[in-house]
Length: 255
Image (cartoon, rainbow, N blue to C red):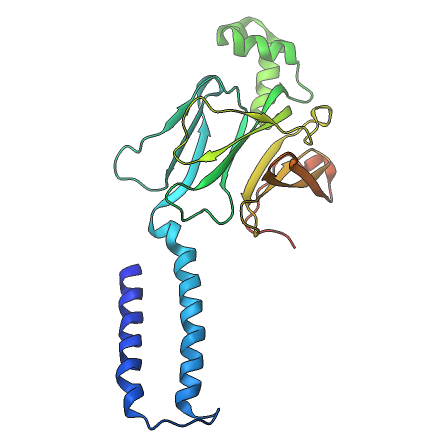
């Protein structure tokens, strides 16, 4: 598809080159030649912006991350692969929720700058016997057979799988990343207020990303740009039903 698009564009430009010398020149603003030249210049800039925008997809680039056993983090920058794509593994992260995003302006770079964020610290399921649930996860599922309270705790966790966490961390660097990662604590995401979910996406300003968290009562937007300030709260978004704010996903930046 990209090849066809470029082929048609080249044919269009060649037709302009062959046609212009044939037309009698005219200095008036309304002359078809002058109007065509202006339209062509605007069209060129628009096509360039389009090509820059689809370049990551054409290159099959995109950050994919997930959490494996024991909270280990796995990351790759290939979206679709017919072969077994290589994953970078970062052990002993103890992450519960994870998200990754390119820094704005570096999406098409050979070695893009990106941020990986995760929620860690303490994990808690509301209205669940935490001691019983932790024992099942730590020891063996076999204790469910003889412990009704532990079984009830696991059933409740299964029905309500989104837990709340106390801390947020991020690691910044250029791809490919090299273990071990250095995780920085994001202090503005306060420990005592709990966080259920986290999301991130490139901001419009170069080198920045927008970070969103679900706190149970609202959705909070943060701006991350590195440096001494690193991350700061921009605004909260109050939901119609506060108790339902357990996850957050965005497709476009709110303005």
